[in-house]
Image (cartoon, rainbow, N blue to C red; front, side, top):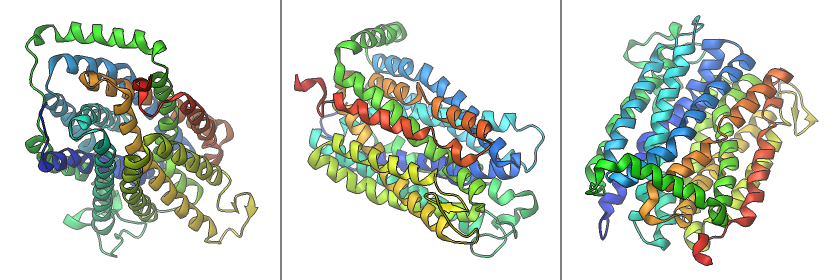
Length: 445
């Protein structure tokens, strides 16, 4: 790709995290997801189930296509054209959420639009991650990854503040500042909250400009005509070699499980707060700021820990923290905290959930940054996009499992709280697979 990427190029690469983070922060977790279940569907348990089945379908699509796209891209060369295509999907899917009106009769196409945008985000991320090892040496990649993830969280915080202060209305029809939504948006039809879709789309389109202008791309390979066949052949060869590459295979299995559980937390945290604790969109948004702030700080700290001790200890300890957090969440409701009864008017459950949110954000930020560093260490540099395609596959091969398990458990128990229980065994199994992962991959042999 190049002998040395400049600081400007590294900043350009980090702007992908800044530009794309609002899809997770605003749409998936803290604003649109809770709004969809509470206002569009109007029933917490039913909305959580529909949301879970949609995320399962999206995860299956990504799992099937991600490694194939990565293999083809490695055989053809440039990554930016692929990112352009998937960026269009991101922007179109996010913008279409404007039409998610309260109590709509058929929300199917809203779920489809969300899925299109989320698929675009996932595929664009594969190609962005594949650029990471070209940004610095082995000792610097962890710090760059952590700094990029922290920068992305700050982007999520700023976007969430804009949403809460100026657009998203509460039950009284005013924003966190106590004013009606900007631009004359109608609180009665929740236009302020629905604007989260267009805001996320425009945010991405604007802040991806530094990425496309500053980040250098690899050159097109001479034999690009047979890129599809060659890419699929290389992918097949890589898949056949997995049984012999114990560390890589164990890591893919581990990340498949713990990232699936983490995505379950992100995908259902706001929905859980709305249904179990009765929080408003504004309260969930404040919760999101706390979680995103913790994520920004600890992703940055985790990057330095990664640089000093490597990504494996960071991964192990953050997964342990998340196991404890989920255990607290499923034993806390409006009437109890960790099984101990409390007065229904007590603020203790709210305080505990805020603390859990900070822990999820902090541990999740550090975990995700260390995870992509670990993937770099387990992979061949000349097949990096394919490797991150497999990484996306491992993250999505069972991506249907956590949402589907949550949806199924929620329906069977008619309880949003008990519906979160399946996340615990996923985290535990992911931790066990890390026993076979070598910090520097097969290069240790």
